[in-house]
Image (cartoon, rainbow, N blue to C red; front, top):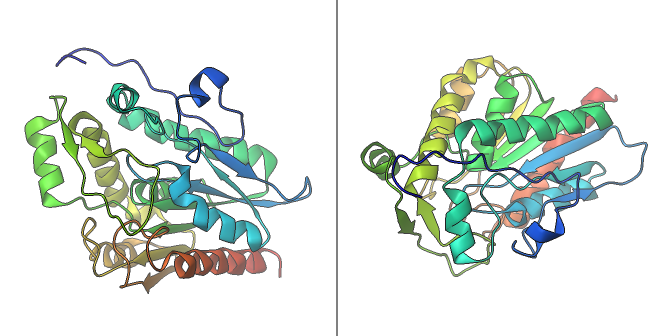
Length: 277
């Protein structure tokens, strides 16, 4: 995409619907959106959101733990994400926008609300920032996050200011201790949308009234560990903070992923017990 050229709005793919075959064949086979349902009588669901450049694969450990705890789960594929081929990855990630990403999240919650009495939300990193935004808007009944991206690294913010209008891919350092269905680069144009989501989520923390769980690591090399304190200090709902300091940023897939996923599932199970005493 040339500098200054307008961008076509990039769609998202709901976990509630099948991905069109012409698109599905271009996506990571293990990074597709998904929906896990127990039976038609279920009353509670958790919407699970992946992080920037990742896919629902990243949120799947949490979704599986929540499903095992007794409630349904769904994970959409956010706009511009999920493509397996490098050329497709670049073509679509530059079409990621703030409005498109936020509206995609609202749309998935709206579908969930049509089917379920209670809707919870979980998000990793960018997904965590989006989850907090949805809690701020009063759209969910409880919210859990891992490493929520409401304070980006200084370098990311500087790059947004300097290169946000220029299409630049920056290779990521890939952690070899675990696999993730994720793009091998960050993009400067898409980074503008991420930065705005982070700022909007941070600005409106006082609007949160639902219960929140924040899982974080003091060793997170991406999101500053001051973030949980901000959420605790400014939210008007109850906030639990749990530290997993053997992990780095991609918490559901890292060394403590099982423990983290079980902690989130127990948090949501407690909310169900409160709703149905």
